[in-house]
Length: 459
Image (cartoon, rainbow, N blue to C red; front, side, top):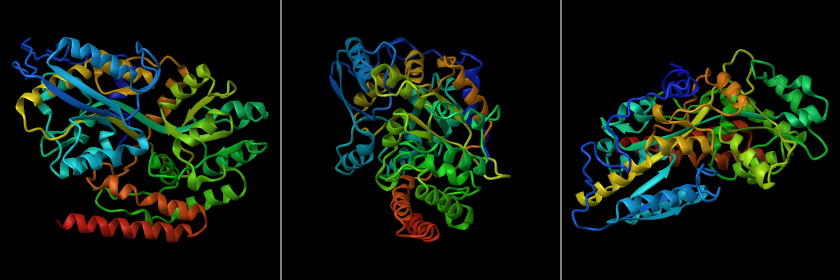
């Protein structure tokens, strides 16, 4: 059954847009204390050190000493340590493309960080499956009604909560309408429905291409942001995973091969930017910011990335953003993806240290903190009491359209998602380099992934 963004996860978006801002925050106290008002940070005369890692997701956070990722966290850690002198927090940011490898190595070596802020909707369950994650439902038990229930559901197993969401980042398509206007092609820009059919997309992107400008960009250098390009195949009517997220079914949809064949053809025509097999997602974003790409799929945070770039000079001032639904085949309702970020805690054996970690995490997920982080990237907050209104009416208009679309199943609920995810991009590289046909690449991917899943699921 399809899930609409106006139900489930996107109930929170609806509350944000309506500025309800009246969620049940319980008896939460400033500083992360307990409802009783007692310190209860687990110290009892002892000192604790918390190892805290984060991917560099939040930049340009209001009140931070600089716009760089990690600066807001450093500022808040200083405030926390001043309030809790018996607790020290060692903080480090881990680059996106190194995060899973570094965290995985640390966990395997029994040297995991205590707390991690990352894409918990897609990376948490493998650690739950292996018994490495700490249940943390008690961390927010007095404020749980303020959190989006669908997000909490995604980080719960067997009735136990293993993650605390902070922000949701919807993913859809973006046009640089400045390129269309510069070439007198305003009439090709989608109207109120903010979408194209596949035929309309091909025609529009072909017309806007040329003289160093490309209609769109693909990336296959690694697995990062792969679901954004998979939205192109979902919009053709294909599915990647079955409903239970236990099997890859992409090979059962001929539309997937058809879509990839079209993209290879567009690459040959010069409509897709060259070198997609070695292009990473953020490389494509930089080309988009430089006014060289007319359309890319990306997350809602692109709005703030483009605006920040106009301030620091990394975005061409002629870039003009327009959010839209994924271009789709006739008769197909396109699907959109999402990612959400939040906290997970690795297994703890010392009750005192666990209480110190609880105090720290509660401090970090206060409504004003969630709101500041959400506003930094135009994200949707995980807490109703952190709701806010988008400053840019263009964002509001885009979200009004994409919030009505069903959410794609990208397999994130599978504990083996991170492993299976890494199996797709090498096949996509081979297809883009014409070393394999689309059919062959998809079949090889499905076989390798399903053999792996079958073996894991037997245990």
